[in-house]
Length: 97
Image 1 (tube, rainbow, N blue to C red):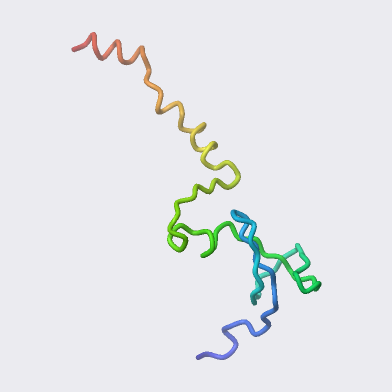
Image 2: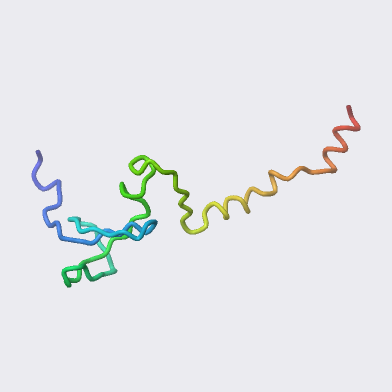
């Protein structure tokens, strides 16, 4: 392996799956502005993840709908005008037939 390619300074962090509010300790080089206190009383950097192996349907065997930041509502509002039928256009196409 090439030297100097991989980070060398891994630190202990708390990972929190925000979809099920479950946390665990791990090692990471990712930066985090937030901190949290672990069960041992020590404070560690907090890294929030939207989905993990503890909440993903492939690993749990259960389907769970996760909508982060209202993305689905935003999509539905944006494209709602395309799903509605235009009654004027329908009448014109029927009259032409």
